[in-house]
Amino acid sequence: MSQTFQRGPVTGTAVKKRSRRKPFLVDYYSTAVGKKYVMAITGIIGVAFIIGHMVGNLKAYLGVIEHNGEQVYDIDVYGEFLRELLVPILPHGYALWGLRLLLIGAVVLHLHAAWSLTMLNRNARPVKYQGARDYQIANFASRTMRWSGVLVLVFIAWHLADLTWGWLNPGFEYGAIYRNLDASLSRIPVAALYIAANIALGIHLFHGVWSLFQSMGWNNPRFNRWRKGIATGIAAAVVVGNVSFPIMTLAGVISFQPLS
Amino acid sequence: MTNTLKNLTLKVWRQDGPNTSGSFETHTIEEITDEASFLEMIDILNERLIEDGEEAIVFDHDCREGICGTCSLMINGQAHGPERGTATCQLHMRKFSSGDTIVIEPWRASAFPIIRDLMVDRSSFDRIVEAGGYITAATGGAPDANLIPVPKPVSDAAMDAAQCIGCGACVAACPNGAANLFTAAKITHLNLLPQGQAERYSRAEDMVETMDSYFGSCTNHGECEAACPKEISIDVIALMNADYRKAKVQNRKQLSRT
Ligand code: HEM
Ligand code: SF4
Ligand code: FES
Image (tube, rainbow over all chains, first blue to last red):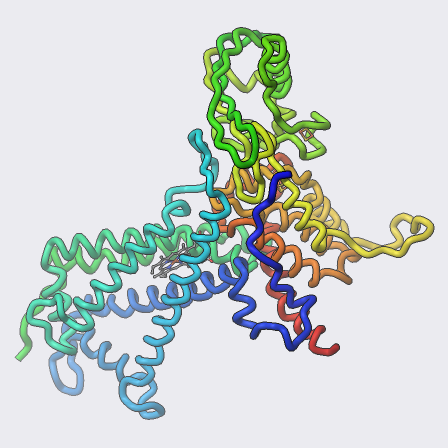
């Protein structure tokens, strides 16, 4: 008789006595559906950040303003505002670090869930179809989530080293955001990298945002027909906003002049 | 109008058993009427193979009217072949043209081991249903019809989900080898109805986790819905996910009272 492959027993909160159960979140995360909830929630945190980050950066287009009687770049003031968030309830920089820790946690969980579900899926079909598949619905975005995700991850690392830590930024000055932005993005290969990575991000979100509705169990005839539209809209907004920065820097719209 | 198809090339997967490796075997069908069903075409080929003293191609089939869920086959890279909302037994040769090459493979998933040639063992589906795909009902005389009122839209939605014939095309078509559409259909048709409420949450948890122990994980490609001969909507997967989330909380609460 052929032996059906099975990974292991059901975790079974429904049948297990309290003393033998794993903590709720650990138990939940140990299942594939639970991991998809984690992917979706960490994805939502990511999307919220990406939109906030993009909108915040649009301040680069406001150029120079007068602040406390001085001529300064608006986006530099914005950067300082972020560090001052919730001051004086919290000391300088604490709220920003809290947000950063949340994001780091979300990326780590998102990655771990993506990795382990990918392994699960490989094991679920160890022998591939030997003839060509003829996909009906699956699209480029849904089939390249792992690749678009990894590209975004590599880009995030570059981006931090460039504009946060300044290692890859010529003449980096801490807090001089407008200057650093111009110095980085006026290099054509770097601008190309930013454009490519954000298109990958857009592709990831085009499938990801639609997918998260299903993963979260958000399915209702009242809004179902909006779900793909919302995903396309968010993906398009993020791509257009983010890709505009390298293009506008190369075009000279974002151009740093030292202010006396 | 009957037409005759000429010169079809079949590439059929042949494999002796679950633990041997298989390969494609090529056969030529010189002539076949387009009124033949796909399975009749294989029957005719098998007659010829038997006459020639060769082994007939082993494949699953039973009702041949699209209701039992026994037939399978990956035909030219599509589960149940090129016609939407149709099981392989209801597919006819008029969907093909003379000179076509047709590639026929079994469902491929580790939870569906190949028994022989195109026949796979789908008993992992039975394990999922055993875990909670039933209701507990009192024995005795049959209750009167319509004793339990069910709102029309709810009964419609439940009946849509209940159409699942358990064929496994959803798993076969899924790039991840996930069984979410099957499991969700089986959970949804009971969880929507009043009769299913008593076991709603133990059902959701037990069936999802049994599914989890055999199959891959859903990434919402939507291939299953396109392959499903009963056109079950992936909406049921979202309903299952929501019920699973509620079940994890509810079952804990209830158990902590004991
Ligand atoms: C760091 C590298 C990343 C990798 C390797 C990765 C990988 C994945 C994978 C494999 C999926 C599941 C695909 C599916 O459901 O079809 C996914 C879903 C998703 N990702 Fe990512 N991702 C990454 C980064 C990001 C980032 C930075 C964001 C946010 C801006 C994001 C947002 C999402 C969303 C919203 C989903 C949908 C969640 C769901 O369906 O449950 N991802 N990701
Ligand atoms: S959901 Fe559709 S494809 Fe899947 S087993 Fe049921 S009838 Fe077959
Ligand atoms: S043989 Fe019964 S559904 Fe096809």
